[in-house]
Length: 104
Image 1: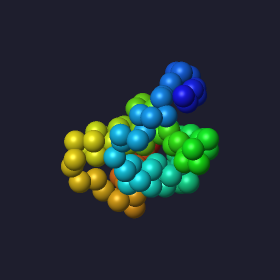
Image 2: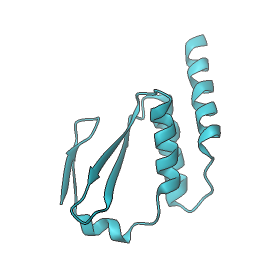
Image 3: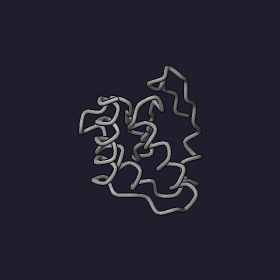
Image 4: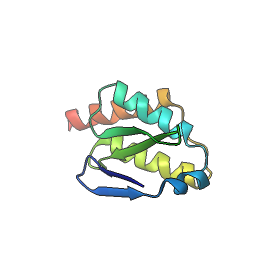
């Protein structure tokens, strides 16, 4: 079992066997890491080394931020089997959304 508090202070509980049924989420993780590396604070990546030797990655975001809103849409598209943009396109969109927010 994995327990952790996310950035919204919600308690998340997962059975580690649940992850064996999940599809490869590396494309989402790549985008999330790029957002975090760029310094945007509306998204965090939690990591935990499991006893099995695998790693748990939990991605949490705030939908009241441009990066959280954009990531939420990308995540939904990914889980629906739709194509998702690469991290460069996502970062450009976030930057554009912040620019619009400042000029309003």
